Image (cartoon, rainbow, N blue to C red; front, side):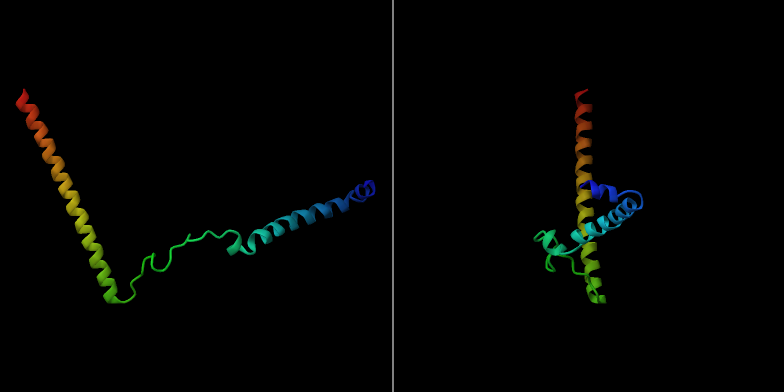
Length: 102
């Protein structure tokens, strides 16, 4: 054992260190970079084609999708306006009830 340490003096030690500095990251990348599908796979992680969005490609599909999006926006706007009107009516009723108590 002491003969190995005697040989690893000066330039030989530097060559050994350089080899470790170069080979360790390469080995690390090789170990974790190969066979990724089996090693780090999680079942059902990515959505299937049926679960994901279908991108419209022709003009008719694009127009249909735009119409659907506008309809959804209109429904959300109506709900928001109805909720705001209801909140306003409640605030008005509270104001009137506090004024009538005085």
